Amino acid sequence: MEPSSSSSLNADTADASNLFRVIDKDNVHGLNLAVPESAQGVIKPWHEREDTTVYADSGVDDQMIIHVPFTESVRLRSVLLKLGRGESTPRTLRIFANHPNIVDFADAENTRPQLNIRLLEGEVEVVEYPLRVAAFTSVTSLSLFFSDAVGEDTSRLYYLGFRGDLRNPKKDANSKIDIPAANAADAPLVDRVSEKSAGAQTTAR
Image (cartoon, rainbow, N blue to C red; front, side):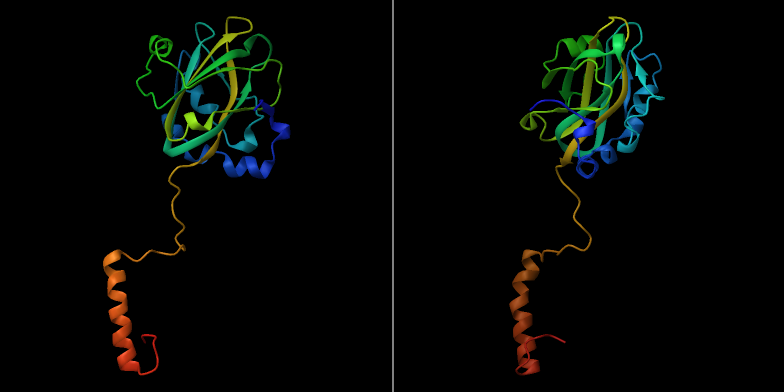
C-alpha cells in the first residue's frame, strides 16, 4: 500500500480508528528535542491535525526519537504524520515496537526496527503511511526515530497519530453476560423445581 494524504481519508473512518484516545500522552517523551515538552504537543486530536502553531524540532542535529506508550494493547494499521516543509523535512523514519529499552541513539542504531520508512517530501497535509499489520499486532509502546532531514540540520514534526484498533476492547456494559459454568449447571435443576411448583408454567416467578 502507498502513503496517502489526509484529504483522501474518510473523516468518519479516520475518527473511528484513530488511537488518540489510548495514547498515554502524559508519558510521551522525546530525545534530542529543542524543547523537551514538545513531544507531547504533536500528539493532537484528529481535528487539530493541520495545526502548525505547535510542533517539535530536533535539537543539536536532525535526529530525534519520540517515545509513545499506549494505555492498552493495540493493533496498528498506519502512522499519520504532518512533517516540516523544505529543509526541515525528515526523510527517514524507523519504528520500534515494544522496545522501552531504547533510551538513547546508540540503542536505536543497534536495534533492528520493525519498519524502516522512506518519508515523502513536499507534502503539506497529513500523510498516512500503512504498516505491516503482522508486525504490529500487540503494541504497548512505540519508539519513532526520525532522521535524514533535507537540510541536514533540523527535523520538524507537526502531527503524530496512529490508526488501528484495540486488542482487548472493553465489553459494553449492556452486552450479554455469560453464565459461569457452575451456575449454568444449576440452571436445569432450578427449571425443574419451577415446573413442579408452577404446574404447566415453566418460568420461575
